[in-house]
Image (tube, rainbow, N blue to C red; front, side, top):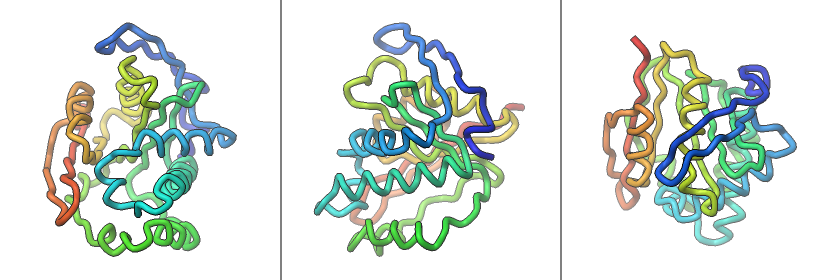
Length: 208
């Protein structure tokens, strides 16, 4: 299901974050904003434990921006990508069993990871629950944090998925765990990657 056909053009969400009460207009990410969204995520993940470990230090920002662009393009085609009007926050989800990425994309991903690819490919975490959607990425411009945008994006992502289907995610930043817990996710596993970050697996259960 493509983002452009799975949701109304805009979702107006009120979020009472730690700082203030704010309303955000969220929409499926238009293709014209793909580069802006990738640049935003590269900035948001600049010091993220997983990307610091997985993406070479040489040309790190360039590599990370390109990787984010590839992943967002794939998620737009096969899942859901939401952003606010100014693209200061982005969230992407994939459905269960999405198609295998094209060979050209896989080759680009391997090349961008450079000498880190072997370690990245060898990192193993528990699989998500059968039939679950996965929240693949969530990023907010560091200058816009503290307004509740991240929580609004997570809740919009959950609203976009049928309530009877669980949503899984992974994070390597302990600060993110509390945000996801506030949105109804529960911790299911903690994986210590050899010579790498600790990855926390979480699931938002299906409605009963």
